[in-house]
Amino acid sequence: MLNVALPKGRLGEKVYDMFEKAGFECPSIRENSRKLIFENFEKGVRYFWVKPSDVAIYVERGAADIGVAGKDILLEYEPDIYELLDLGFGKCKMAVAAKKDFRDNPRRTLKVATKFSNIAKNYYASLGRDIDIIHLNGSIEIAPILGLSDVIVDIVETGTTLKENNLEVTETIVPISARLIANKASFKFKSDEIEKITESLARQTEDKND
Image 1 (cartoon, rainbow, N blue to C red):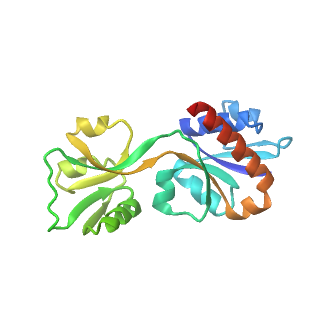
Image 2 (tube, helix red, strand yellow):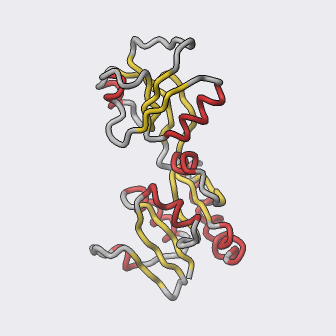
C-alpha cells in the first residue's frame, strides 16, 4: 500500500481531487464521516488526514510514503525528505511586516515576533542583522501594536489583516505554495508508484497554468 498523508481542510480536499484524477481514487474518503484513514486495496492506496503542520513529520518518519505540505512548513522544520513537485496552489508569501511609521535602526537589536522562528533566524542571519526572536503561537499582528516587537515575520495572503491593524509588508522573504514530498526510503522502494503520481500531478499543474 502507498500511504499518503493529506493536510486536513480545503487544501487537502483539493489535493485529493488531483490524486483521484491521477487514478488513485478512494471513494470512501467522500463519505461524510469522522474517519481519518481511508483505503482502496484495489488501487493499493491508503489516505489519512493529519494536521497540515504534521504532514512532513509523518513523511519524514515513514508513517507516510508521500504527502503534501506548505513550503513554509518545510523551511521552518527542515525535515529530511525529498521535495518532488510544486503543486502551484495554496500560494502566499512569507514576509516581514511592521507599523506604517516604523523605521529600522540598524544600531539596535531588532525585535521580531513570529511563529516561524527558524525562517526568521535564517533570513536575518543572511542579512547579518542582530535580532531578538519572540516566538508566538497566536495573533502575531498585535505584537508591534503593543510594542512587544518591532516587526513580525508571518504568512501573508491578501494582506487584509495587516491593513486592518495599520501594518504593512516591508520585505518579502520567500513565496509559499503546496509541495508534494516523499519519504527518502519510500522513494527508493516504491519509486514506480510515486513517480506515476508525481508525473500525473505535474501534468495537472501544467494544464492549470496553460
